[in-house]
Image (cartoon, rainbow, N blue to C red; front, side, top):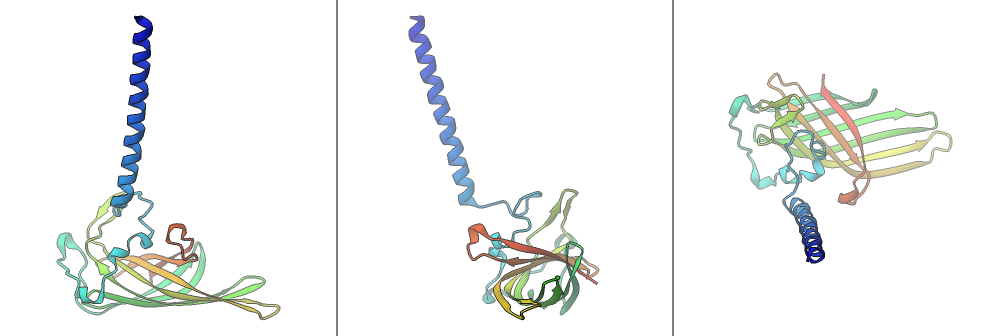
Length: 211
């Protein structure tokens, strides 16, 4: 009798283990279907705009509704942001973003730099929009006053071998995102993509900040 009870207990434990595994797999799949929490602090998607392309508006979606809720920055006139770009501690040229009162954002970036054997020239153009619905958040908490902008475009890079003069042109996607404060200062990121596969995007990351 005890042996039979022991076998029954083992079977029940095995069934329970299978149920737990199935539940975990279901939840993992459900998270994939629902998508990531874009605004959660520490989320790996906080600085991956290719996962937030739903924030890029169609031309028929303008003007962007700006309520200025909780002190959120409101663009009431054409705003021009002139910024310096860096990668780590190295200068990477100048960036300009123009934001229209209807929420449209567009910009240009160009830079050139050299290494011992090669020189590089990069130019880029991008368009997008502001998005008042996204709330800035980091480890210190939320700041509802900052205004988010997201843009997408193309960059062209030319690598030149200094000895031979041979050139390697590259054209790929660029994302430029950032946050505007009430004093018209702003800072953000540039992402130069290096792979057409959205699931395995590689990128070079740059920082920009208004002068």
